[in-house]
Length: 231
Image 1 (cartoon, one colour):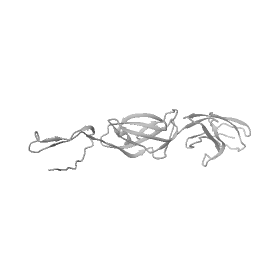
Image 2 (tube, helix red, strand yellow):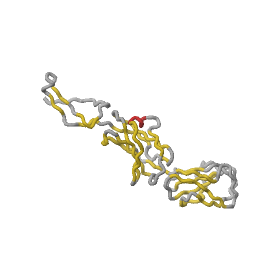
Image 3 (cartoon, helix red, strand yellow):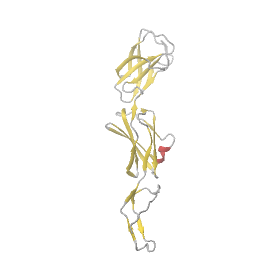
């Protein structure tokens, strides 16, 4: 007679080449049949990190997380941005469920800056098993080198602001503030070509608690604040 059986597939039997053998209990050596070749595959599942619309920053750690169903021993991680792919690493499949997941330091490479990045997690033993994180952003980072901590700038005179940029950037915005950037700050200049310096005509807002901010024009979550200085 025809029959069915609900089999709970074990998670430690992942393979791309599996055959099922049906035998007769009273004569298994002579009465049997093999199935066609089948796959027993795991799954790569959410919750994922980065999450939707998260931001990761060049030269800083981006935590990549995932879960697995089945004994997926090793996975490959690849980051996709428009027009480019970055190979991140090969690591244990269980790494994604650890507290910090896989810690990827975003490289300072051409093409990495985007608001449309995603990471693909792929089973190294079965390329048909993969999944993607939600879309996230990668933004540049900056390091303001002038003015220095405690430096005194003279009101109503020119001063050259200097910074280093990490990540390919076309335009930046500059701000100053006297309240630790509790708000948006006061705009100095917008849509500035990033030449990593700007001659600022220092205003007459006299204060012992002034800071500058360099921000990526396309996504101001990429920024750096200077140390506190005086005007």
